[in-house]
Image 1: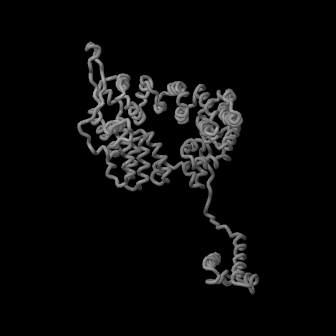
Image 2: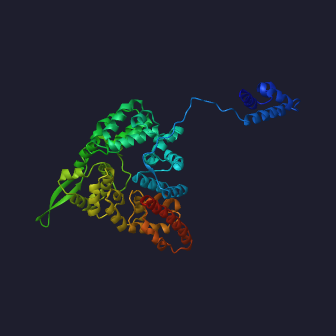
Image 3: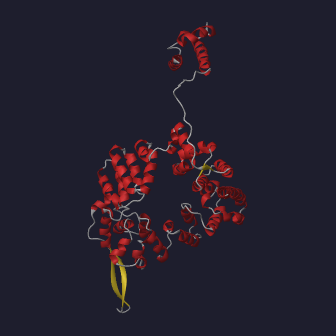
Length: 494
């Protein structure tokens, strides 16, 4: 429709510079345009009349392009059974609630029972998977052959197309490649590293940085050689990401460099006590005779921003955050409880306890997390996620009154449901802060709330009149979400 381009061109230039005439509309419309606008009152009126005619002509439609060779194959017959009518009804209700945790809960139940989503709901499930990468694998399992077949009609659904991982790695979108790499890193870390190195020269800086972050999965000393080689990269972002990972590998040269400084600063000595009759072990915090200036290029700050620490102490504090506590065990030949006791004995060394906690978190040291909870007189909530489930529950309940917000923050990061006591404490606290803990909060974390708490929701009603009404609405919503969880389990267990 070349004439439409002429109309747009005239509109942009203005009728004073260019006048549209009927002859420019082509043989089909020019004769009609002569009849519609034979003697216009002005150039503007003639333009508007001709444009109106052309616009209506366009609205009349066009003939669809015919391609006789194109054929659509039918979907392959499914190998697994579709889920029951009851399960399908629950899925529809969950989709109406727009609760991703409940959708994940339903899909995992469907996956466990080796069932499939019914064809009528597959498009909306695939659309959700395109936006929620974490759900893609379970959607593939629950989508079956029909999901693979549908993926040919929408590029956003290609994650369910059945294409091999090697092909997706080579030709997929950036997001698809990241997902594939994450999966492979969990299953075969060495192969994932090999894939990265094969395509490394062709990747841009942002992609390289993303891939380095994925190496955090199953990170080990086998990654050191590759990561250390990245110090020659042009991109600062890439070098920083590589350095961050090297700091998490105890045998890396950077961690060893930090340790060589710290073991000169912390000295364990035997002193006489009780008139020289008893030996007492003490920890002395000093300063090394010299410090390699290169550490200040690795993220260690030279000047203290904390009044409690001198510049030298602050450097030591930062280095200790990046040193595994197992190093102290080997160096001093002491048990974890003895090391913790040494740091707690006097105010000079006790200041460094938070640095030890940061080290535990930094290296995800589950063993030392347990020791710290048992033998340290100060409670640190940051250690909770590293504890076994039963201990997480125990310490969360024990210290909930003192640090409710921190406890709730860590509780919402879990994969497993809260225990009845912790759930009751969280809901009781939430009822008193309805603006912070609203419907959205419970929608996001409903998978963590146990069914048994449903009967107790009324007990958490606050005394404040305004909050009482809000909690009544919120608790009703919680009951609705819990009901969907129960219905899901029943539907897949019938």
